[in-house]
Amino acid sequence: AQKVTQAQTEISVVEKEDVTLDCVYETRDTTYYLFWYKQPPSGELVFLIRRNSFDEQNEISGRYSWNFQKSTSSFNFTITASQVVDSAVYFCALDRGSTLGRLYFGRGTQLTVWP
Amino acid sequence: GAVVSQHPSRVICKSGTSVKIECRSLDFQATTMFWYRQFPKQSLMLMATSNEGSKATYEQGVEKDKFLINHASLTLSTLTVTSAHPEDSSFYICSARDLGQGGYEQYFGPGTRLTVT
Image (cartoon, rainbow over all chains, first blue to last red; front, side):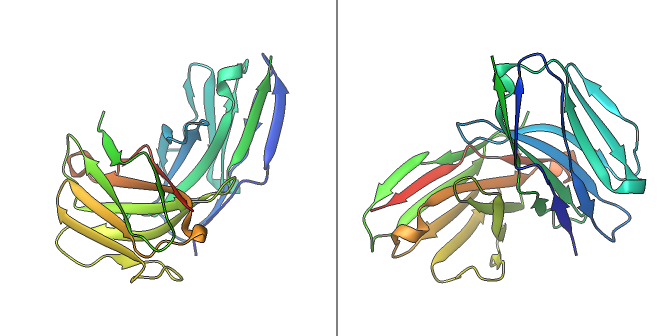
């Protein structure tokens, strides 16, 4: 069975702090994809990153970075020097990689960045 | 990037009436679209997978007769909430896969907030 766990329900930080959002997944598939989405108060999901199971390279995009470790089934997301605009709910999701394409979402982490 | 639109963005209806929500892929073709429901402060739950030209596949616990899904073309899927009740009030989000990107890219619509009074 597929499962995504985001143990942190809510995180509050002060602006300029670094923050890491945890994501642990379960799957028996050898080919799969992992995603992070941002959902601001408007509700629209914003795609942040997609990573396939064969690519364990860490990725950095501006203030965002992702650490993918198959050994621990984790795909953690770090925001460096957080800003108020980063306040949102962040979802980690798993795609089995088949043509079915359904996403299994974690429960989400509400990040609040205070000025 | 690919764009998925939803209409309407917000809708308020009276209990017992039906509401139709449209999901369109604007600049790509999508043989498969997905419908999710999200309750306040909760995650997205897949309701059904919509395949162009065939019947939708519903997730366990989702009433097929209440949530009618039609995927008549490669760019349009509709979700009709029939005989809506207050407990159907939720945020409905659709997504579509872009075949041109190998089918792995999935794009989400902006969502439709349904309120049943």
